Length: 292
Image 1 (cartoon, rainbow, N blue to C red):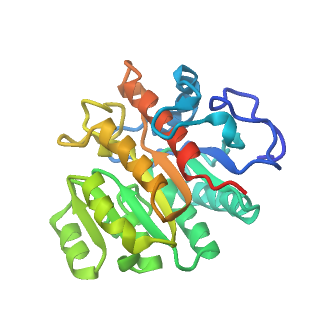
Image 2 (spheres, rainbow, N blue to C red):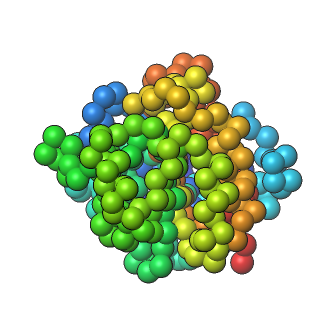
């Protein structure tokens, strides 16, 4: 995958053609090999780009326009189809380059396991890194049916790497009893059901710290986002999630990277899941990318 050439396919709305001068890089991680219910999130990154064309470039939430941010859409990382271990290694290699060039990495998934190598690379860059994890599911298993490389394991891996006290999960409403017990006993911060209100309470404690944010689209209620592999009733609204992104943008934390994962377009012919994901990406670009 070349860094200095514009992607030849559809790109996210208003993406520039120059990698070198960009402040942020959008890249796809089209992997869904460990999906335990419904596969299809490998097609999420491409469709998020395509539906972004329905968006306005101006955000009334942040009163900013996309022409105020220099970002480059690199397309999808060419992964080793069917080989999770090799694919995660390729993601690591790519993100390492983006981070070493001091650019904001903005990943599109793909199953949630793709977040794990990104966190590893971000931690190499920021040894005081904190994780904000927004999701319906705990993702705190050590393995799934004996397989440690699973979409059910990335947040447990993050806890093991960073220390559970540096991991903050929001919107959680599904998981094994043992996962919730681990969260209580390990010192990690897990907030059930809601996102915005607990965020308001904890963000002051993260002021000045580098934070990586991972958003699983299934944190939204299936009524708002049916296009995902493991839809979970009882979720938040897209309004609350957008307000949470804006609130983080206006806080004193330093968001150093982000991803939006688990969009599976085949399950949502209405396109509402893909469109809300694209809108999240727009607000992330406008609110979280620091300008040098």
